[in-house]
Length: 100
Image (cartoon, rainbow, N blue to C red; front, side, top):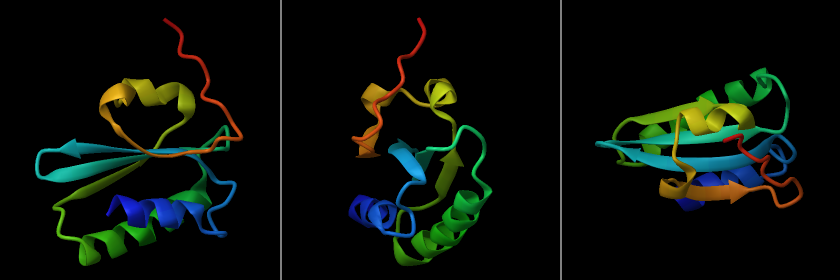
């Protein structure tokens, strides 16, 4: 499934929209966290993620899939990056430092 997510992120249609993508196993399901390049909520990306979610649920036997779109500065409130599966990181844009 993670290979499928990575291919989807790298598709030309998604190019430039996604900065990072992480997966976090949650019980019988999986949480997928997408960090958009935009500073505000990307509604077009949200529509694409909703369609993709429907395809994942039908195509993979993984249980519930939760998809989240979060800004970079909010991500650490929802996941522990060191424990998450790092599916994609846009090498052209470095991670922003996290305030301690």
